Length: 294
Length: 303
Image (cartoon, rainbow over all chains, first blue to last red; front, side):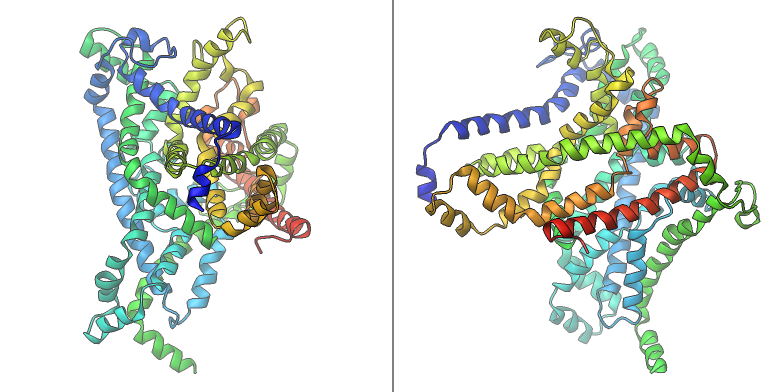
């Protein structure tokens, strides 16, 4: 069968289709390449925004401005913190709740599941949620990134179905040795669930890294702004005077807005781009699990 | 009986102590906001306790139903969603079908991996690139002038009439590969014997695509179509919030953005909660109707 497929002639369709797929790859990669090239371009070229395949004149000036800018680096720190803390808390909390609910003999299980399912069908929406956060004191508070993102129904269902595939005999032998439910969860179940933990952790991390909207709504003080929210302000609102002042102080000249924008965009994306080749298979696996469950 | 259950409950205190924090979390972050929807029927002010605000019945509903800006946001939402549904729904399906025709496994996998990269790029970045491309001297202007399609620069993102198309094309560029994953997975699950049999019967490539591949993934298509129709009153907030500006607002303000602007910018909490409330009722109704229609037409539904 395999041989026969290989022997089939490559016709016009194969060539057209292959070229089409290459075009898709090009269209997909070009936007990021564009940013990369222009972030390294010397300011006078980056301002033009012209189509370049390589930097016209290589320069690190824009990166110097970004990396020397206290605000930007602080935003980077906030984003890193919320990504790490938010992901750990989300995975642990959701996994613990899911483990309890994965036990069929749990009293009240049917009620708990219905109660959880209702939250998927109805929700309060933007305004009631905003008012609640304000009343809870989460407005302009770092915890607004962590606590509302602690749990997700979808991830819980994925955990539950995965925990069910772990052989009962493993858990029972640990119980016989006198382990508590928490002991079984942390010493037997979670170490055997690394694949699903990785998948859920990665989705959570990508969410935390990329989210700018929470910062727009809930954060007022500069020192709590995540990097993506600062980027939103730089790009969409064009408010980058703080970076221009920095460039002034550093180079004695205004750097064109574009080159600083491109360098900031690169700094905010590099972690995703660096890890992407290694994590993408987990991300796809996650969608597959979700698709089967959903 | 009841005593037995209580005894079991106490005996499982460890398991219960795992679940109950989750139940409390859901109560606070899901059920309390649902309960707060009743401010849609009140004149709520943030300074006072909620229940001491006066009830005003359907006043806010009458207000938004007579607000031109509300109807404009409905038009924009439906416009953007319809373009996405009519022109965009088939794109990931076509992409997955064509990808499936690639014979080299390595090339297939490489194209697939590359195609969903943009999904993981934040809208701040992707939107920033789009704004640059659409602006003065940007890639789009250079292309259009180079190809002789226009003779001078156009600030695409400042002209309202382009906005719906900008959201459509930037969404296609960013999400096609990712949306195709589910179809690719469904196609991978098709029994190869079906193709072999069809080939023996003399079916050509297009016939196999139509009679085997499309027919086999029909349930997946049906479910995603139901969800797309049910979500017609929603919009990609991250995207629109990034691309909107004061010049294009009259075509850019979707229902989501209207609720945001009325509620969080203008501080009319009760008013925008009324809009939210009405929208979730209509969205639920749409979901039920789309499911019903899909069951009637193709025999596949969600529930």
